Length: 304
Figure 1 (cartoon, rainbow, N blue to C red):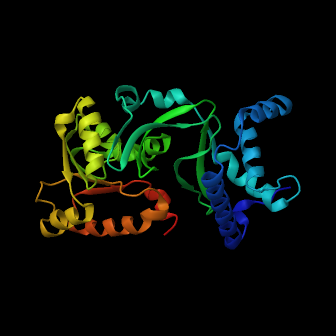
Figure 2 (cartoon, one colour):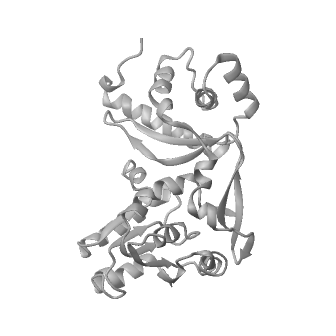
Figure 3 (cartoon, rainbow, N blue to C red):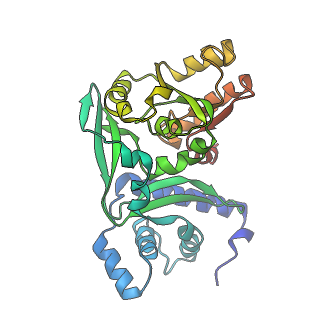
């Protein structure tokens, strides 16, 4: 009989958290498309289990867990995987207004390339923020599709830098929901956040601060002309922290007008986000009436 996870010592909870995060990092970085449709089909047919369970068992084995003979591995599997693995429906994301209305061309400008990338069927990827349970477990959120799933991306020097995937859509939902009045966003990317908030009647203006000239060129020439409310959007080429010094500290949030909400999306993931997040948090004290929100903040806080 499995132990009650909530009653386990804190050090074992920490060990489990570290183990799950490390093994998933290795899998996602080295072989995210290891699991194949044929094997999933065989397991679901022969064992009469769900696709998610079959995927979970294969992922556990690929990560080195022995859930048949090792008690700790079996406990980790049952306490993490059921709320960690998600079979996503492509149609749910195709209904997103950005996916539905914006056409992404394949072009290259300077060191940046705009193109369509793909998740293969059963390829694993992070699909949402880390979920922290009351008992201390940190549960990664891993998604996969049963079909090929295309998504827009910007590559910088051949490396994927900015995307619009289910992860971006899910982790920006709250910041989109909270937006009203005059909105400032640090980081442009493919303009997903700017587009979503510009569609809201309660949003008057959207100021975007982005320092990469090539990204701005790609956006203003190929993407923003497709926005129905492009007139709300103002692009400023500037370093985010220099802009914050100018407007929040020296200008006390008045140099470019008072912002009702500031959303920061300047990092690739938690590995490069923690220090940048803490640096931006320092500006909040200068603007007590402004709401500050941050991309993947919940995940970053798990590492601080």
